[in-house]
Length: 434
Image 1: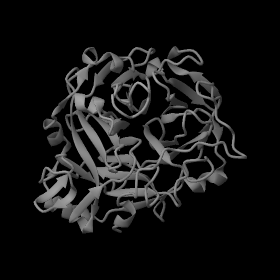
Image 2: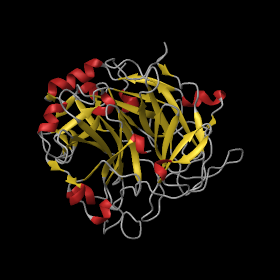
Image 3: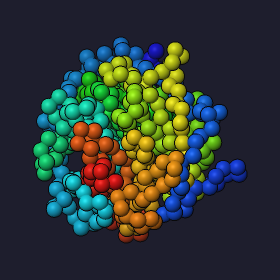
Image 4: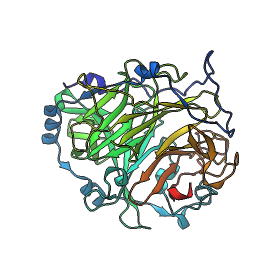
């Protein structure tokens, strides 16, 4: 079924989340406080977490493929036009965003324009280390960094980072889009991109906070990366061809997963606004770990929940029942940790970054379980030593390196106005150090 009405653009990117402790809920920990043990989400509440699968018709995707050149990941990497700076070439404010502990294995800063822009912010992160056991996509090592637009243009883009040569990373932007008009056109994604997972040939991104059709996730395919024919500001068909807001490449969505109702950013009692996702290869079958986000300035507990992943290579990545519904797996949990930008699961532990919102504040990386919470990386509780304003995390399975990125380029008053102070850095650290 070609459910374009469901996965078209949102009305707007959501307003900032409001945070309140509602009657009957358990208050979260204050920023920096030990959040304590994970607690179970009552199974009676699982219905609010159920997702409905929607697929774009194959004919729609095939039509787009005939209108624009269909290129692969390798072609995008070979055209990479933005060099990344090694740690030694990063600015002092960028390097200062790295963790105090543990020591990082590698670190890279963005090309100047992306390091300083306040229109875009880095959010989701995944890699070929998620996509395949050997960490390669074909012959390439690739990191994908998803950025969301803050300028009211409802755009989302992904940096395809050529990570083949240590010390010589470079990247190319790809714009995420949604097909329209039966595949004869496309438009911008129109949703806040918060988290990302590359699984097999599929890229899954979150669609939190504002999707007009209650979508929680969008799905893209590495088999459908198209090259725009016109270099212009528009997104979609123009008089001269097809434009992608100045970007050379687009990825059209091939499907989505929606909630039964609009997500509720104010409470953990209703449909969740999915903030981030990660891949857990320690479960059998593999699972997609999702979490919701509430402000580090608030006290709202957040849910952590899972969906079973289907075998890679299928039409869609999540396992669904006969009605096309992806049911949340047993064992959904809730944490009092605040400011959760990502939850990385490994065996029986959940690593969660408490990304505090103040100027110059390092975060706390908690190691959570149903037995309790400890501060990971040997920082000591409640000392803050993790990166500043970190976002999504991703485990490169074959090397057991944890990758993440920092977000900020605000000004000296923590306002997203000039003059930007660049604090964005992509870095990795061994899982064993956590």
